[in-house]
Image (tube, rainbow, N blue to C red):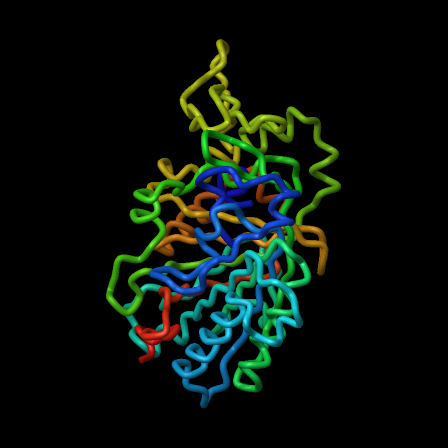
Length: 366
């Protein structure tokens, strides 16, 4: 979903292209913490460069409702710049996005979206503490200093009610224009990442946001997968071999079947001697949502250095099958997967938005 599938955060890269890096750094735009949806999925419209994802468990006797409400209060003061724990830093485009894991969702309703655990897949080397979890705190900002400062404030508010499982920092490069009003960054393998997705409001209502039941309406489902990448072995391939793995041109992102970077691949197109222009095991073919028979997922990827070079893949969708069916099909034959090893995996219900009258998590745990 990399350039179009596995390789994926904090916000949508859809919409109008963001201002140049220099102006973004000089005049960061504050992102409201409240609203129908939590910030950090489709807002801000241009994804921030830095991320920290913290995955934790709640103590067995801890009620999730009060904890989530307190975290929401802290998110509000951080986003407004009024929290003294910001240590004088401007909040800029800081966003904090909170999700709850399947165990907590099942405690509110066994049939609710988000109640199902992720199945296991091939090419996983995951320690028990790096699989699953009760709580996700995703923190994103252009200013790298804000991320650990905000995390410290939130973890201080949570106190000993949570036990951290794992955390991952990541960063993104500069965005590349891929269509009118749509941008995407390159991933560590050199390919443009996140070309296909629910970019318009209509597409997001169809494939991203949960319409119901009322307790989860306005939320979404997130999948996190931390992967190590075999950069040395991939770099040893010729450019043509690398492009065959993805099914797109490395420099431009254009499908091997032709068109523009924003064009969908013509999976039936063949050479005069009968070979598919997009190889049968190319990533864009194996992860193609139309072929899989699922909706689009909003995908983000953040490059990582520790514990090993790789990426943190994050996808948002309103049906977990969008992810699981896609990866199951990729498992059978995808030329990209042999270059990846997954070392952490979890899924979370990203809670609906909140405000002063409706605290974070109150629709589900009120």
